[in-house]
Image (cartoon, rainbow over all chains, first blue to last red; front, side):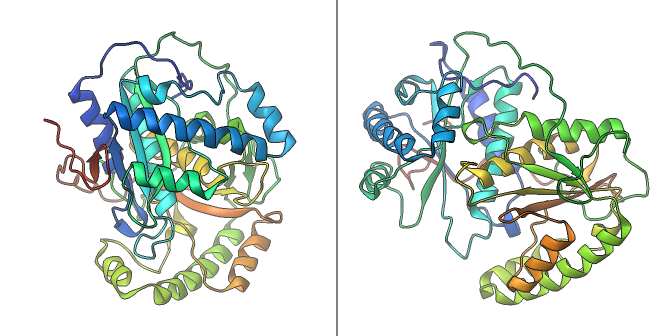
Length: 197
Length: 197
């Protein structure tokens, strides 16, 4: 887990079906709200769909960044590797879309469950020596969202929570420096928790 | 991952500080939206706080279940171990609250990031032979939410995403039957994905 880095550039090496199955299985064993299996995964292989997807996402991302508060834009521009250009949508050996219906009362905690499943997939992906980046498409225009829904044929209310481009990292990135844990409090918010507590 | 089961009854055996640190570290290495560390973890040890928390949560849970559609209530009643009685809030050797500010524009994808961190913690917890259940408190009355916020001294906008009672399982539960992966589609929603595709 500690060696995890966001990977946005992948080698050409293909991912075996066996490894892909392991990733998909990891998602399906994660816990879900009230035991409802409301998370869906699309394996996007069709090159035409991926090319169109890239166009929609890149335009949406540029609009979204422009709409963010100054402090977030600042942080984004300092994130290593962050860019509104998303070549990996077309080129990653495996490209998954994770979707659910956030407002469907039949799926309690839909978004929460989807991201637990994503967490499980990330650990599995890293554990097998593969890399990925959690890319959440952001749109400020309803029209762009509609284009995406049509492209993936999503039913009413079903929305993309995250895209996962997956492959062998092109360049092995250094692990992050150890930082222990942070943002941990003792009994009440704001009271520092130390391991000696 | 496959052997994961929700654990709601714990043995008295304490969790060493070393293992607790590993769990907290797992949360802090998960990816976050735009690299913002907006997830907070409270280690709840104070017995008075835990007793009051249990009262608030049990009452809230009963109200929430009553407010759910028939189909969800049905499913809940069939979930093994599901109950509005939450003894583990008082008795689990370690009890964590994961909080964030879902509507704060300075924390993009706050809920999503919090649940990625929870996914990482779950894998770590299971990997060390411990058990937990992701318990998301549900309230239908604003007053109950206020009581919770006051008890944990949460600042404006900060809300509990999930509680994690953690300990050694009292009874070792059988693994679930293998089911491969489910809800996986090919290129477009609804098109079945098989590994032979």
